[in-house]
Length: 64
Ligand SMILES: [Zn+2]
Image 1 (tube, rainbow, N blue to C red):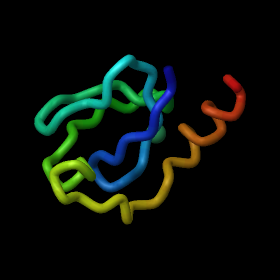
Image 2 (image 1 turned 180 degrees about the vertical axis):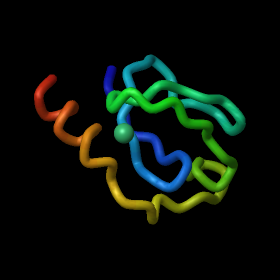
Image 3 (image 1 turned 120 degrees about the vertical axis):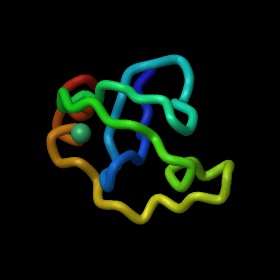
Protein backbone atom coordinates (compact mmCIF):
# COMPACT_ATOMS: atom_id res chain seq x y z
CA UNK A 1 0.00 0.00 0.00
CA UNK A 2 0.98 3.61 -0.37
CA UNK A 3 1.80 5.59 2.73
CA UNK A 4 3.30 8.92 3.70
CA UNK A 5 6.47 9.16 5.71
CA UNK A 6 8.38 12.22 6.79
CA UNK A 7 12.12 11.94 6.33
CA UNK A 8 15.01 14.35 5.83
CA UNK A 9 12.85 17.44 5.85
CA UNK A 10 9.95 16.43 3.64
CA UNK A 11 6.93 14.19 3.73
CA UNK A 12 7.51 11.57 1.07
CA UNK A 13 5.29 8.77 -0.16
CA UNK A 14 6.40 5.17 -0.36
CA UNK A 15 5.03 1.80 -1.31
CA UNK A 16 5.24 -0.82 1.39
CA UNK A 17 3.34 -2.91 3.92
CA UNK A 18 4.93 -1.24 6.96
CA UNK A 19 5.95 2.25 7.95
CA UNK A 20 9.72 2.59 8.11
CA UNK A 21 11.27 2.69 11.56
CA UNK A 22 13.95 5.10 12.81
CA UNK A 23 17.33 4.66 11.11
CA UNK A 24 15.73 2.78 8.24
CA UNK A 25 15.99 4.20 4.77
CA UNK A 26 13.55 3.88 1.91
CA UNK A 27 13.21 4.95 -1.68
CA UNK A 28 10.32 7.36 -2.02
CA UNK A 29 8.01 7.58 -5.01
CA UNK A 30 10.02 10.58 -6.20
CA UNK A 31 13.09 8.34 -6.48
CA UNK A 32 15.05 9.82 -3.60
CA UNK A 33 16.45 7.52 -0.94
CA UNK A 34 15.93 9.00 2.52
CA UNK A 35 16.56 7.86 6.08
CA UNK A 36 13.93 8.11 8.80
CA UNK A 37 14.87 9.83 12.04
CA UNK A 38 13.27 9.28 15.42
CA UNK A 39 11.62 12.73 15.18
CA UNK A 40 9.92 11.55 11.98
CA UNK A 41 7.88 8.87 13.75
CA UNK A 42 4.65 10.12 15.37
CA UNK A 43 4.45 7.06 17.63
CA UNK A 44 7.79 8.12 19.13
CA UNK A 45 6.72 11.71 19.73
CA UNK A 46 7.60 13.13 16.34
CA UNK A 47 5.59 15.74 14.48
CA UNK A 48 5.06 15.94 10.77
CA UNK A 49 5.66 19.63 10.28
CA UNK A 50 7.72 19.27 7.14
CA UNK A 51 6.28 20.17 3.73
CA UNK A 52 4.91 17.52 1.44
CA UNK A 53 7.22 16.43 -1.36
CA UNK A 54 5.59 17.75 -4.55
CA UNK A 55 6.97 14.96 -6.74
CA UNK A 56 5.69 12.27 -4.38
CA UNK A 57 2.34 14.03 -4.21
CA UNK A 58 1.82 13.94 -7.97
CA UNK A 59 3.12 10.37 -8.15
CA UNK A 60 0.62 9.41 -5.45
CA UNK A 61 -2.25 11.02 -7.35
CA UNK A 62 -1.30 9.31 -10.59
CA UNK A 63 -1.48 5.91 -8.86
CA UNK A 64 -4.90 6.28 -7.29
ZN1 LIG B 1 9.38 12.56 -2.43
